[in-house]
Image 1 (cartoon, rainbow, N blue to C red):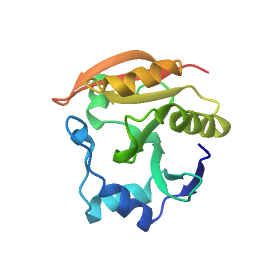
Image 2: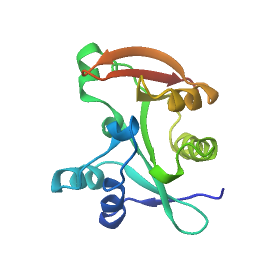
Image 3: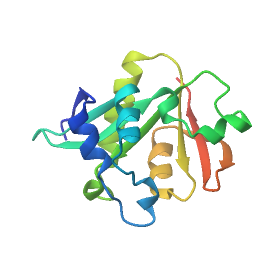
Image 4: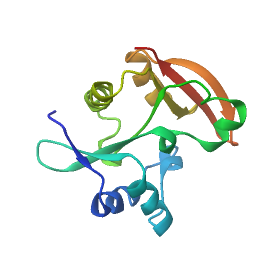
Length: 155
């Protein structure tokens, strides 16, 4: 799978915000609104395309990738590059995650020398397994009431 990266724009963000995942991943569904659109346009979000020029996912970095409640327990106190990802719903669970996530990690590591951190819902065993394949290890846990885990990858 040959992937490419583009700056987020209104067209890409609108499409992404209308993606709908099946349960239990529907937790990650968003609503298209002025607020959610601005979130994606005003923060470091990037659109990912396949070789057929189809939008297949995105990633974000910094505070956009953090769960606000994690600040209450100090989950983001240390200096890491926080990353968040999303893949088009009809592509998930098909074994594409490794190539997709590898592309994201390599892209981020070319720009940043800091270690990486991500936050994932504890029920998302599929994603946690993928992150562990890339050397991420569980660090902290907090509830929002959804239970989240932060995972770290040292450089």
